Length: 443
Image 1 (cartoon, rainbow, N blue to C red):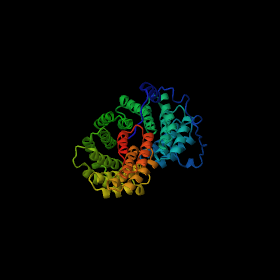
Image 2: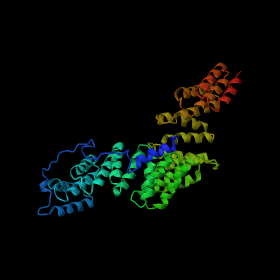
Image 3: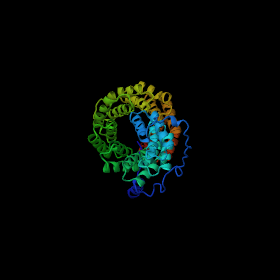
Image 4: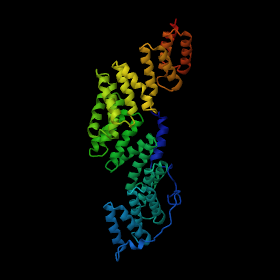
């Protein structure tokens, strides 16, 4: 797997701290309201709202009726009541609170555009309300929910800047990290999650921060640090809903560290809990890979093959299905069943036309053809790999075996031409010396 290489640590940390600091100058400098957000607020229409409020009830008692509906998750009914209070009695002491809960009702109903509108209305019409901090936070959440991450980051920054001592700042920092994570800015995300863990380890978002801190480290290629973070997460928050995912990424990190036995232990535990979900699919794939790669297992290829087969059959439309199909072929090849391997590699492109393993499969088909003495076809197959997959990890290998096939056919001129191409295309290849030896021996 390829990972982004970080630049100067000092520069990176300055940028990261600027991103996650509550007093950052990189955040918005102006108060956010309906006028500065770029969002328009629809005019208030109170038609029909008069019949919503209970007769002869005070505004405060009506608010409690709708708050009870909200607490009972009857958000649609509560929203109508909160709207009536806020819009028919805008000067009452409770109207700003009603407006806030109106926004929260829409948020709970997944009506994120409407929720954002109502939270913006609160900032615009009731700027001194005690819920302004969380309204600003929830505006960020509505943007996060629809993957408008840049806008989400703007509002989360604003919470940290304007309300650093509010509990909303804890949630804002967590979702600021989540926004950076989704943008694949993993270094900035990690600092945010670590801030939550350092300063608010008992908060409701601390377990999520611990999980995503480990996932950020994994994505940065810091696998040992990820294992440490994820083990601590599982120990510190044993009742968290994120424990299974933490164990999954712990197993994946151990796989990357070539700690295959430990990886299998954790991944098998995940499979025992979730064998069919997204985490289960990944756990099965990395369990199979940990078996395939473990040189201490004498029967690793025999053991891995049914695992890859199960993965492909159980998750035919999953993200690892083509990987499983390819590695099933590799297991067949390693156990000497070249006929089955050749057929398996041959239908990869048909079954998974977008697979990134097609070049590898073609290469091994060429190797099988060479081993079976089908030299002309082997040469042609390697030529296809070279022509169509110039960025393949096996490009230099394909050149080498094309030369071998040409030499075996006494096609010396062609072999030397291929060698010249290899020197030009893959000048750093460790196989150049062997290619030269093969070409020089052509008679």
